[in-house]
Image (cartoon, rainbow, N blue to C red):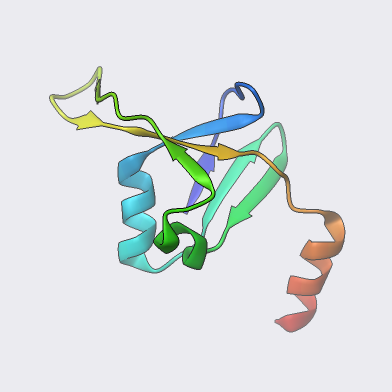
Length: 90
């Protein structure tokens, strides 16, 4: 699943918890894009629940009655050399 971040705060990107849960259910990695750069968080890292910070405050959606929590990930874009390695494996 790919998420386009609109802003970074203190080097972190906030993602809604239901997006992470969806990646777990679909067994896919989470790709976060910001200003044309992409960071990939492998499924294994999403399952472990470590390396990122949870906000315990519940937020309410503007569009419907759902609530969600935010999860912060330190934004470290994939390097070009990493992308080349993955392309070679295909």
